[in-house]
Amino acid sequence: MPVFYDQMNKAVNLPATPQRIISIVPSQTELLFDLGLQEQIVGITKFCIHPADKVKLVPKIGGTKQLNMQTIHNLQPNLIIANKEENEQSQVEELMAHYPVWISDIKDLHSALSMINKVGEITGKPTEAVNISNQIFLQFQTLQPAKINIRVAYLIWRKPYMAAGNSTFINSMLQLCGFKNVINVDRYPELTAVDLVAANPDVLLLSSEPYPFSQKHIDEFKIILPNAKILLVDGELFSWYGSRLWHAPAYFNRLINKLTAM
Image (cartoon, rainbow, N blue to C red; front, side, top):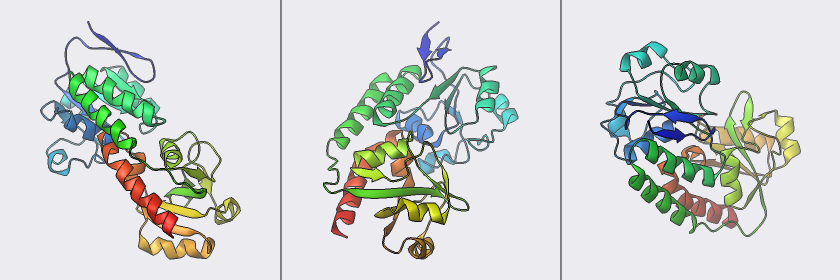
């Protein structure tokens, strides 16, 4: 019986190449489709939105942190693709009692590329996975980091304000852009307006997800941080660590050029 190891260094035993796969992580769902596994994907979350024309045809098994266990059981998967951060540990452990569960743990570009290759191996698409990871790697060679010191804060939520801090994939993307994250706290700390003023970022980046910041919120933050540049950014390109990463470097370059010119 083939044995694969996930990014938690946990052995995942599969008797054969999986033919009924459930993904409970949006960015990894998109990867599975890009690997050519459309016929094998039998369940995804309601937050799995890419590729739009294909995900609408797949049964939904709840949210990333609120899985419908009975629906999953009804679908009889022989592999579930999960993530340490995006899914609830107790629910993942419950699934592990019934099914092979492969868990990713993504901190940076290196671990994202490793995930892509490992998912390709366990799903029987190793060549396709290597092609995708190589293309992403080559795209990141085109990234031109900011040559000036740009101090940023990156918000992911409102009421309460929450930021991307250290030890996050988002922070690793900020670093690749040459930005300095002024939120020098691990994970995703809650912040007050006073905290934001004290952090004193040159630039405040408002993510499009998970909270849908929009133009109307810029005025709100201009009152709090009148001297900061405030921009809306594509949260998918900062936080999705699957095949969507291919699009990130070109977007980052445009963002860096915009901030440098402001």
